[in-house]
Each structure stands twice: as C-alpha cells, then as structure tokens.
Image (cartoon, rainbow, N blue to C red):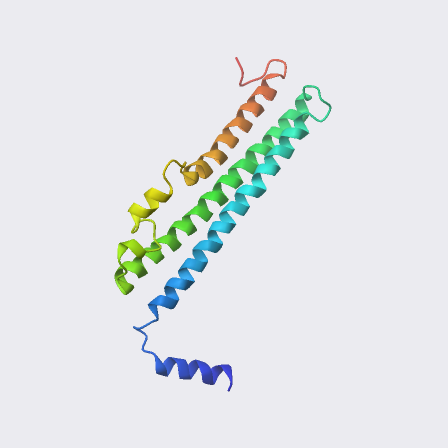
Length: 169
C-alpha cells in the first residue's frame, strides 16, 4: 500500500476533532524529556566555553596584556549573551511542553492529581519530592546574565587601562 493510500485511509477512519489523548500525552512527555536534555546540554556546553575564555586570559600565569583582555572580554560577553538567549528559548520550549502535558491530563484525560505527570497538577507529591532543593531553572536563567555582566566588567577594566580613556574617570 502506498503512502497516499495510507494517508487517505487514516483521514477517512478518524474525524479531525478526535485524537488519541494518551498517545498525545506520551508524545508530549517524550518531547519534554528531550527538551530537558537539550537545555542541560546547552548549559553544559557554554560553561566549558566560558572557562576556556577565562583560561585564555591567564595563559602565561601573569596578568593578561590589555589587548588580550579586551578581545577575550568581548568574546566572553558575546558568548554569554548568545548563551542566555539560547537558554531562555530552550526553557520556554520546556515550559510549553509541560503546559501541553498539563492540558492533556486535565482537559482530555481527566487524570486524578495524585497520578498526574505534571508537577503543576501533582503539586503535593512534587513539593514533597523536591523538598530542600534549589530552583535550577532560575539559576539557569540567571547564570548567563551574570556571566555577561562579569565579562562586561572585565572589558571595562581593560579599557580603563588605556592611558586617558574616554569612558573611565
């Protein structure tokens, strides 16, 4: 049977208003898990990149030269801004998939809250399981911004080493 025949058979066997909510829930959970992995991979790639830039400042073991400090600081700042934008987007996709999971569980399947996969619905169990932990998403959002600010401070410091700089007192 050809793909066109299978597609027309599937169209005729299901109305456009119906879908298999359990299959869709499984898909949303898989997408959420994959997005979580992507989010951590992004986090895991940019940390070593920032560390390498920091090492580049002190390759000789002495305080870096001004031109090296300026270039590395600019690259670090740009890297941190890009990191932050990518991280925010990845986290937004994760929130989206979690919202889809919540909607399917409440609107289409009507699962009791005690067995819900969604942490927003199964709040009591989630709070019990995550007691004493830190909100990692807030840290993930903040760390790129903090990194960008630190690189910007580094840039300003190296610029101020120039004799009679324009922007420094």
